[in-house]
Image (cartoon, rainbow, N blue to C red):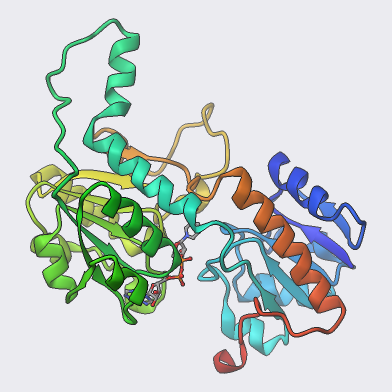
Length: 335
Ligand code: NAD
């Protein structure tokens, strides 16, 4: 099938071309993000292939559907950025890649915990400046600390397993508890109890209306003083302004973010020659105990290969009229 691939970076192209080595599909790569302005690029393509920061609102979906798109193939697990009611009304098929490497994201969450705890980001710079003083770099043993995992699906469960290896006690919160986590010794508790007892809280639940700003002023009030908050899931799980206040008061002792509420205008681009206009984001960068990465938790060889192979397989399923296990059921979203 003819596929318009949006938000293409060199690495996307490399892995998608390798997965499509048999030439099953005709892939045409576009660097711009998919949005209303760029939707015209999809004219004549039955398939549009999109990533996490493409704007898949009703207007854009209507425009691509009018241009002939019938399948929207997401190269991501999350689909919170798609207007599902509009996609359903337009009779679009929506496919995604639900599990490409939960290890990649879980390992990144743990990397953030270790880096923040032992101030590796600061030590790296200090040593390069010839500053070998240790003041300000004091960490704590992870062994024996309590970690609260919010969302114990694929990624949360692996994060829990890794942290159990460090000798951490595990608390969990999920709308449907995971027996694998219970087998690790995780204790499921109400969210408030998890916040109150955890030295580290790591977010691994999806962004849905119920989890929007899950971490706001009230949650922060319930947290242990000096706790560490890690978000590798979706930016809007966190009310960034409330978290900034929590950092200023010391309630939040360390913050690790791989995702950010307003990341669409920032992440995946080289903006080093631009003045960043987002003051909330810029304020975060001034804290020594904040570590931000630009939505790179998924970014491993294995994950990119799996994303590419699943995306190509999804499109082939659609082309051949086969039921695809990665299809999102849009019927329930019809207005
Ligand atoms: P998953 O579906 O396997 O697990 C999500 C878990 O969250 C499930 O157990 C579900 O029951 C639980 N959940 C649902 N609603 C909840 C609620 N209201 N409160 C608490 N828990 C709730 O998903 P996953 O593969 O583990 O991915 C988790 C999230 O990680 C995704 O939603 C995605 O946003 C994010 N992600 C980020 C990156 C990255 O590069 N930073 C990459 C992939 C995925």
